Image 1 (cartoon, rainbow, N blue to C red):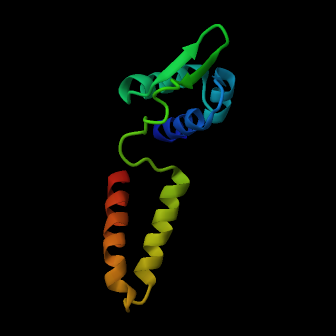
Image 2 (cartoon, rainbow, N blue to C red; image 1 turned 120 degrees about the vertical axis):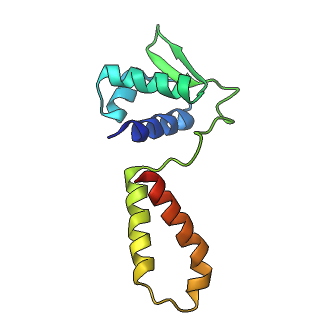
Length: 120
């Protein structure tokens, strides 16, 4: 799993959590070493501006309550599964008969190809 996928998982985990998340659970979800987990948390907090608060006494982290709803990751983040789905959809569109749907699908295809070239 690469850093961007771990960042997306960490963000989604903190966004969905109703209570602070233990660092042990974070490490298990990210499937990485303790050092990598801390680097990913620092990247999300420092480089991306996530409102992460920590409680070293309890070994937990969470998004600040007053800012959690407003914070989103910048740009478009795709997991490997979502990217694979886009690749499959692009292949299906390549094979489809360019009939009535060609004009309607053209903007969508252009967007998919743009996203795929951004991730290449």
